[in-house]
Length: 187
Figure 1: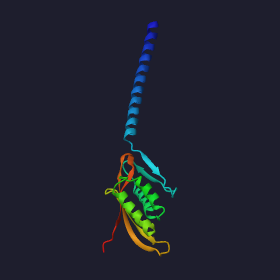
Figure 2: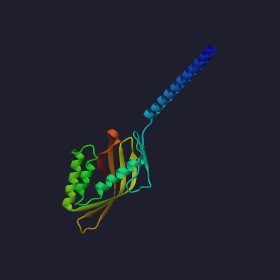
Figure 3: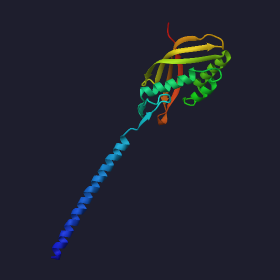
Figure 4: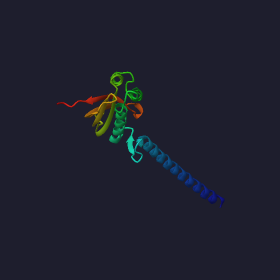
């Protein structure tokens, strides 16, 4: 009688061991699948523009949305083209912090423009009207109304201008300003 009791207990223990083994194998496989999904899933960010909290811009590490580039270009153009002799240096300093070359040709171009603004007491405003994003080529073209005041008592000069802001994506997905140029209309 004791033998059958031991045999039944042994069979029950072996069945529990097999159940535990299969549960462990199942947990290992599910953990491997979850780790694989975690490694291969791309991170997604949602940006909320400073001046429009109802708008959300989604992006991932490998692809930025056109809306993100439009916001980026709009902020840069506001810093570079809505200036007066007193504010230009400060704005250029902050723009150069997000450029590819803090002391290169872009800085020289902006400093020359700053000297001209101070010397001629120029104040400018730019109102963007149209954005064209070219992600594969790495630039945004922005067209809009550019208003310039020469001196303190002059009447404004209004023109339509197009500017190109080119970028590169650095490590960690940071977009850096590569160049800022005006596109001249060919007559």
